Image (spheres, helix red, strand yellow):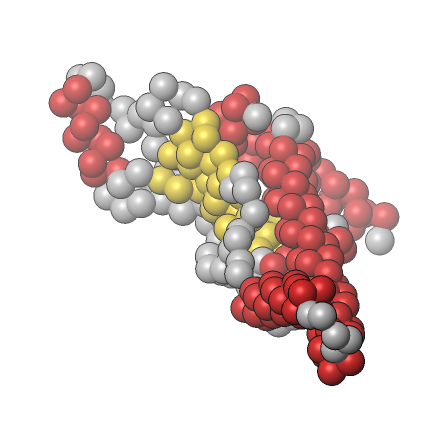
Length: 272
Ligand SMILES: [Zn+2]
């Protein structure tokens, strides 16, 4: 995982290398995801049906002014150093809603990733039922004691005991249904987090060409440049998945992708 995240970090820094050095750069490629992922993201990830069916991996950058100053002071470097400090995966094109995956780079170069656990949620109905069940059990126990301790038969108490037993059985089955539902929800949540992590690994673990392939596929769906996020306004840029300014960037991965796409598009036009 660390290796993949380091690769993504270097990519993020390379793609934003030509960005202004006074502003925080931005890189947040949109990625296509499976139908299962989409459904779960709609259920738990804050993705609405109006949102584009993508997730975006947002790179977090340190403030360039502060990084530069700190490094110059501490290490005597004029280079900006490690600028990308982490990533966050969110459903949809905007950066709100549930964080499906995050990674933070520590000072020693190790990565911390998450979220690891489930989001806890308390269900008031479940708590209420659990309390009611406890009350029933107390009543059942009291009635039994009274009946047992009584010297004469107690038909009223016995009838009441039966009533409370039936009530308890009903409440218990309602509670079990809610617990099963919660368990199933938790499993689906866990599955969503697994899919999110796996998507990051798939994206960052395959080398430059597959990475560009995935980024530009996402860009064609969101109609925005996979490098800078700007809206793509002409059909050629949409075909590339990269806007005209970013197509001329010096990053090796971008140059190689643009070159291979150019050949492909020319051949395509030739055949057509
Ligand atoms: Zn761009």
